[in-house]
Amino acid sequence: MKPTGFFIDLHKILVIPVTVAAMLTFANYSTVMWLYLAMHGTYAILWLIKGRTYPDQRFAERVAIWIGIVFVFLPLAGYYAAPILLAWLHPNVPGWAVALGVSIFTFGIFLHYVSDAQKYYTLQVRPGLIENGLFTRTRNPNYLGEILTYLGFAIISWNPIPFVVNAAWIFGFFVRNMIKKDQSMAHHLGFAAYQARTGMLVPRLRPASQAGRQQA
Image 1 (cartoon, rainbow, N blue to C red):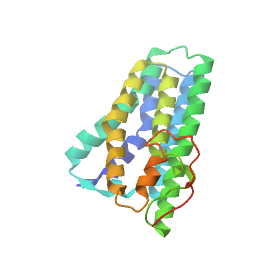
Image 2: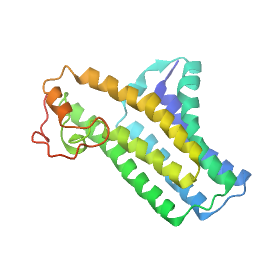
Image 3: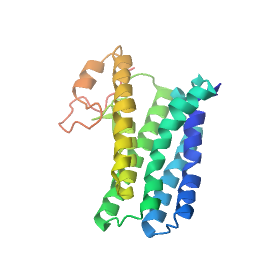
């Protein structure tokens, strides 16, 4: 038995070796390839730091090793498609696509890690709804950040397959978890009002009269 976080961390640990192996195998040392390695490698290292600084308790659940491999690691391995295809096919990625990918990745990594930190340290002090900061207009800024991060990788790869992988994760994991999260938070006082003025994933941009208030 291993915690699910073990298999997620294993995926992150292998990001740099897999990308470097793809570069060596297909002799692709282009600037875009090095940029991708820096982006995805940095994301993976920050994930590992985050897991030891403000860990997500969901990933402490222990599962059989075969379950972790089949249902956690292998689905995550689909994200390796981006660096492998980028190295293999040597696409001529337009400059505007590189700029767009880096920008989306940067917004994504900010939303993901900062909102996870806000959630972790806020709940240490005051359990209950978190309605301020990055949670003011969206109930899942961390998921939005993760989706944007991998969207940035997909754009840099300049191949449709990583977009398909991202879509599979969005509809097979993120949407399902966001629905479960709403159901689990429904018993909190004030959740109905919070739900009405926020987006499940995409921030609701209209003014929120009660934003910034936390309830226990």
